[in-house]
Image (cartoon, rainbow, N blue to C red; front, top):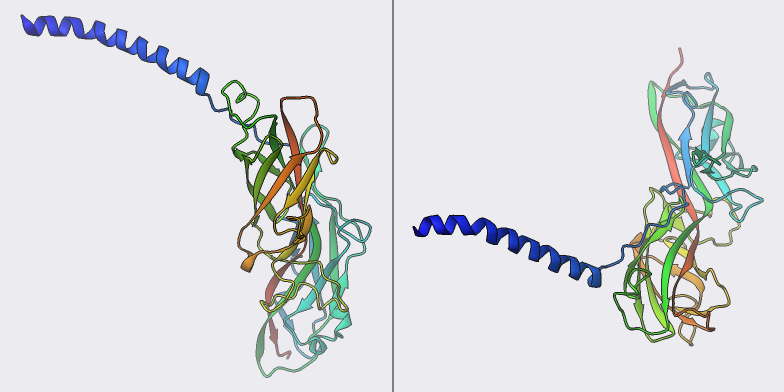
Length: 343
């Protein structure tokens, strides 16, 4: 008798309990819903500035000694990122150096083993229909090379092309601004003052990988952002130089290695007072731009304080903040070459 009653009632109780649970969960979701920010789009993205390669067959894999096999060493440079480069742009320096060999043995002087790019290279971009348009390509050629010395049998060498170029990274993130620091579920559908923010990055080797916001008072918010190196090369500060062999020196003792310039730029330039720690090292608490060092290229966090300087007439709104990085970038590509004694 007891078992019959138990099994006949349990399904009905289960259905009632299930409906009540749905009602409670629906009510909680409505008032405690966390608004998920959409990702910032519009950038092509990617982790490359200039894409570097060697043309097939230039140089050949095997050459003869005593000048018997003239050849060319041709470097291909494609602007696969989203910053223009070249002498008529904001990133004017593009240098290619032929290293790893004794230049005079190949009929080269030291000056002939380094070349600059005279053409501007437009970046990759989107076509009118949204399809990607590749960036421009140029070629740097070291011609009429020949191994002039003599080898008894064969000699294996590695020839390297070092490429050093100016580049920029641009990232955009969203801010939440409110007249008060009180968070309410009604405002969450617009934005929240505290927590991670969406960020979009243009194609480049250095990115802003994380942005977080926190309220300080009814006019000021704190923005923390992380700079991270994601490319395969090495970055340097854009120092003045007397020789093209002095730029992008791959040496840990180089005083300019792992350093760059940072610029924090609100879209509304006259609406905020911006002070960022580590930038300019000003006594009044920081600046909006400056040179920073990333220890051995490790990620670096920068903290900024944005204070509204005028009332825009809205109690709560979203705004945009640009973060721009300027640096010099070095990469290399190399190839083995076998020198044989000619008959």
